[in-house]
Length: 133
Image (cartoon, rainbow, N blue to C red):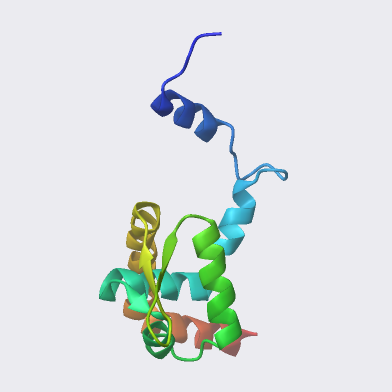
């Protein structure tokens, strides 16, 4: 069997994943990425740069401590976010985007911007639909 370069291995790995297949592992990732908290965390880190936990919590109104912590852990596990612990008193934790996370954050931020820009039309469409129902 010939030796493959890293780029060739990545290409082969991409071919193996098809989210339309029921057993595909990429579905698990898509489920994670479809969370509003993931979108907001990635967008906040993209727009503001690395943030301490409390700064992130203040930026994303309505996120409970539990949800924010769980989402950050998941993003760290998936290689999207780095967690840097600074040995200060009290300990300071900073979150930032990895290169993989930055590439995703660019896409997610576009969706966030689209949602903000088109919300008036969506509200009107919902009202029209509800009136017909």
